Length: 234
Ligand SMILES: Nc1nc2c(c(=O)[nH]1)N(C=O)[C@@H](CNc1ccc(C(=O)N[C@@H](CCC(=O)O)C(=O)O)cc1)CN2
Ligand SMILES: Nc1ncnc2c1ncn2[C@@H]1O[C@H](COP(=O)(O)OP(=O)(O)OP(=O)(O)O)[C@@H](O)[C@H]1O
Image 1 (cartoon, rainbow, N blue to C red):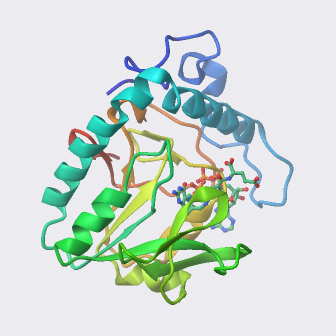
Image 2 (image 1 turned 60 degrees about the vertical axis):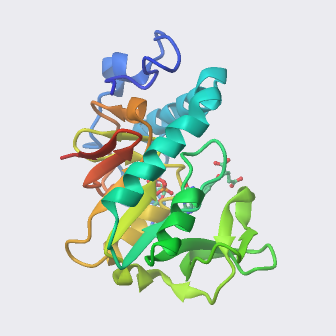
């Protein structure tokens, strides 16, 4: 684990490293209360964290170790989730931490897997969060090359059927706040989860940091799931 977004196995620190610069240690206190308001300084800082993630995740070193890191995480997650009836997970695209092998393993072990659906099946974006049950043989490319299940479309609140929720994240901090790709997809769907259903952000060890910028709508996750297993947060 590391307290900065460059990480020991990522890039060296630079003066622009968001975690090193006090101006980036903001908690959203001056944030707009409505999404339609002008982009704030915190939004700009989140954008810098996203850029840094892209650079780090596509570095030669990270890409080279990706298969081993993913295999370790998948094995640990299958062990941790043994016996769970239903799990939500995003279906990964490179260079995200892999969840496709995990989803296949879960289904093989008898766990139901609910995954995000972003299109109507003809390439048009839905414009609102939706889900479908995952079966390994029935997956299509959706928006932005994100794989999605082809099964019947289910509403956003179907997340209620899941006992554990695995969400995507670029960074997650010790309080559980995450920086995601920026659509607010998880901030919206997590509101509907069953009370007490744990939410785990799937990241690599070096993506757990001390503090990321937080905005009023951000919902914290309960843990990070990495190649070294489950790390409770908050
Ligand atoms: N694999 C995967 N599935 C996921 C997510 C994710 O982060 N990863 N999501 C996490 O919330 C939700 C979908 N939200 C997303 C929002 C934006 C982009 C995205 O890549 N946007 C483009 C630019 C889009 C544009 O041109 O307008 C990009 O970032 O390059 C991806 C997913 C649910 N499914
Ligand atoms: N509950 C919500 N309902 C509607 N819009 C929301 C909600 N939560 C967040 N948003 C909007 O989504 C946008 C992106 O939010 P944010 O930057 O927190 O994304 P993210 O959490 O990093 O991304 P994601 O959840 O897609 O991985 C913001 O403009 C925000 O206004």
